[in-house]
Image 1 (cartoon, helix red, strand yellow):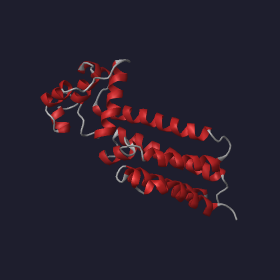
Image 2 (spheres, one colour):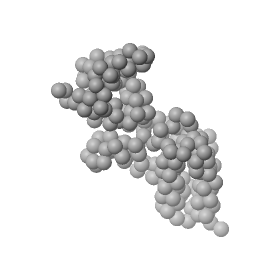
Image 3 (cartoon, rainbow, N blue to C red):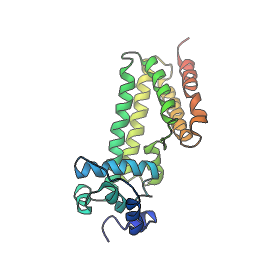
Length: 217
């Protein structure tokens, strides 16, 4: 058995079933290096179906790379999980920075735009929850490399929210940042369950109420 374990152990699917899924029309990832194709495939499958549900045999089959290429790129599945989450982390902050760039030097407008964008994000039909919350749930051990990436993302999110809260002159910026963080985390959860018809549609108004309550009279 490889260091990754068998696919049947990791996802309850036999090798023949995984191969059959490819024969049934699953399209291997195209273009890029082997590492890029593996990460692209992991991005799609881990996010859509869950990390523990997907074994490395499925990643190999769907990416179209040789298993040895996967071994050369990632020493273990845990390392692949961490790389997947690092890539998601980069995408997340690129999304955030794009929103901030629309209103340079105006933290109040940046916060308003952030929560409007977040409401739209979690109502998307292909939204499957926050990948960092999902990973933290799947890997409760604080020593898991994927959980460490997830924790770093949330700590940075909290830090940035506090910076915005300070920027608007909130009376209690740390408190406001934590309130907004809880609001965001709730939106991530509800977007993954109730979707477009759920509470996330009230997100901009809820954020505005919290912000207004913290502004000097």
